[in-house]
Amino acid sequence: MSNPIVNMFKIPELRKRLLFTLALLAVYRLGIFITTPGVNRTIMQEIVGAGSGGFLGMFNMFSGGALERMSLFALGVMPYVSASIILQMLTIVSPQLDKLNKEGEQGRRKINQYTRYGTVLLSLLQGYFIARWLEGQHASFGRHIGDVVSSPGIGFRLLTMISLTTGTAFLMWLGEQITERGIGNGMSVIIFAGIVTDIPSGLYRLAEKAKTDMTAFSLLLIALIVVAGVAFICFVERGYRRIPVQYAKRIVGRKMYGGQTTHLPLKVNSAGVIPPIFASSVLMVPGQLATYIQTPWMQDFKSVFDRGGWQYNTVFVGLIVFFSFFYTAITYNPVDVADNLKKYGGFIPGIRPGKKTAEYIDRVMSRITFGGAIYMSIVCIMPSLMQDWFHVPFSFGGTGLMIVVGVALDLVQQIEGHLITRQYQGFTGPKGPRIRGRRAAVPAGA
Image (tube, rainbow, N blue to C red):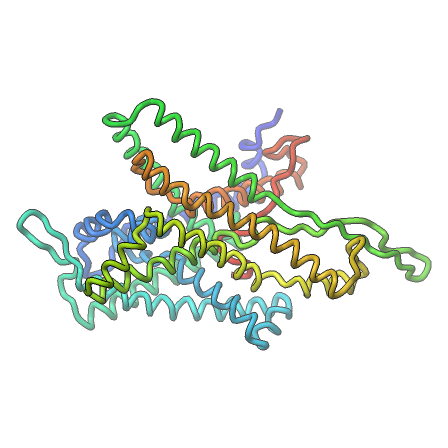
């Protein structure tokens, strides 16, 4: 039996793409260690380490550890993801953008250009607020208190804005190069690489804790939960609701077209990881406001939404469900799908074409979206429950786990496609099911 791992390097094009992707990821990891001018890296690591369980910890995870080093890549590709989501929302309300989106490849290139401009603007704005925040941060070393910024002022703010914006623009270029000449969605692969770098340190912390106050049963239970969680994510991410579609027969000249039966696939988790990211961002607002409004009632309000509490988890689940329906509604239009089916002579058996078909698709989509929202809620709150129940010192959250597993599935699917098209055996074997594609961590069209 041939080995798919060996076969990957037998195909010149695939080998070239894999090596190109690995080379650009190496450049990304090297850039993590270039610190922004004027920042004390040691003190910054102390501050981020103290807030590892909150906003700073999650932001540091998505940036691949760049925030604790305050490197040029501290913003990561999140400004690009935010700009992509904003452009998608504006496409719904703006007739000009909606027209561009329907113009094909040329229109998508124009929208991508607007996304780049939005990325630069968001990076400059976030860079300014980060610079202002850094100027007020300090850490204690015994009796000595050290400041993160040695020379605060307008010069430091401008330098930080330019440095962070340049780093994000460079990462955006790296991601586009990976998408075009490498394997997978470039932005998703960069986020994936940033998250998985925390796995070795997390396992080391877990091993250190296991030596002192953890039993063998607890370790076995944790391992089973993690394996079951990964299997659960793989199962749902590959899940589709297939709606049968029948095409009417048409006679053109002396030939007959149509008459075949196919299906319309509706993804169970069509929103991807966008709802948990949106929900986490909303729940970070009280903590951010509390740093500027130093009043007792604001501190009490912030404590209600501390990560890990039942209030936080309840609101978190509610926001995930809300954003799942919201994001699916703005990215999937049942009316357009029904019109396209009617245009090409397709219909759902037992459903009238046109409005009735759109209503049926919308009803089915709403049901599976609710199931996908519940799935995301379980995955996202399970790590915090494990930390409360077993005190696991592992900062790999549910959102990060979904991104890692989802991007890994997408990469395997693309590699398997290269292998099978060249008559090599794929990862799933000659008789096994094909690994289906999934929605990338970055929205489509980004």
